[in-house]
Length: 626
Image (cartoon, rainbow, N blue to C red):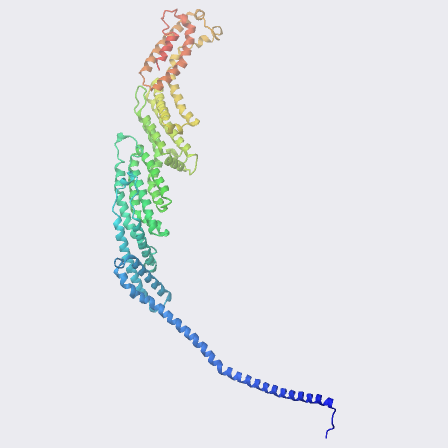
């Protein structure tokens, strides 16, 4: 039997026992939870091992389903091009007239797309289908080409260019709405050529159609002008040198340029940038060929008539070069054709310069001279030619620059002197050539005159007349005066005038010799240093022999002077020449005669037996020579 415990501790002991009892229950509960967790973990592993394969199979099935969907889509895409053939075949084979151009072009585009899609699959089974599509696209392209050719043919009736040029009208083009319509055709034809069987050719068939249609129209329209250019070149020999602007080549060139500008405007709207130059060049191939042929024929005529028609060569150069520069921004492809067409004329023009010099020398050395000292028509011909040359400064500058300064001489050419690409100012080159022409003319005529004229008076007058006509032409032609206005040029020309005057005065030397009394003036006592001369004293100081000599001098002077005056009056002189020569003669002869007269006037004692002219009457005689 348990001993009784203290009541105070009895309650605490009871509480402790309750706590132990609860702790025991908690331990049992924990063990149950741990057992449940073990069983749950074991069950989870079993479930995972059971469900894992099922999940994996589900993912594989989803991927398979996705692949099946993609295959179905691909099959649908493959079927679409094949379906397009059946849909578009009838439309394309019927032609654009039935369905309308817009619908027809859309059908063509769908066929092109189908062909591209088939090409990307690269399946052997599609090869036949691709061939069928190519055939269909080719059929459609040919029908579009027929349409393009037919519509272009409605605008190729030849026109008369002269009508539009004279009235200042624009050359006829194709209506704007038609151009837009044709541009669609060209684009569709070009697109078909890229995707269809024609893609290997590398060009748009529309380009060839345009050139084949518009080219003959332009050539036919220009035909009359080509004929007119040849007809207007033929002139009578009496017509003289070619006159600027009288040949039809200028109008012909203007018309050709107008056609180029018009066609460029059309082509620019109908074709892409890369194609425009090729189309323009192909379109004008025939017209440029005819133009080149005309230039060659004109060149043959110029070569056969070089002295009178070389100016036409210069004009052609100016016209063609200007046209080539004008069209370059729009039709650079045609510039090379123009330059090549011009080449023969340019070569003839270059050779004509040395030929002008040589021909001038040949004519001057054989020209018949009038016995009265008059000039010859050749002088005016050459001066007219030189004046005409100044009207072609631009082409001449180009030619002279390519030749080089002085290389226009035949001897320079023969010696193989290399032409210079650069040199003095072109105006200086032209001045040098003109001076060489003048010197060739005047020196050759001088040699001819010295061989023909026995009298120095006639020779001097002849040379003075030649210079006078040359000088007059220069003064009356502002262009020549400008080219020859430099001091060195004036000096070179004036040298000839001085020789001419000196030659004329040489004819009076004999007359002047009679007025010289060297044998007397050497005596210091009889020389007059200035002031009045005492003729009586001088005469008295002379011996009888010296007096007779003075008397003979007066007689001989009188006879020689009268003869020279008479001869002078028979010579033909230009008005300016007569004035100049008489003044020069007065300047030389009057002082000599006045001195001689003042010294020996008393030899005659006023009887007029030996002295025919006093100073005043001699001066009158000389003045009347002008």
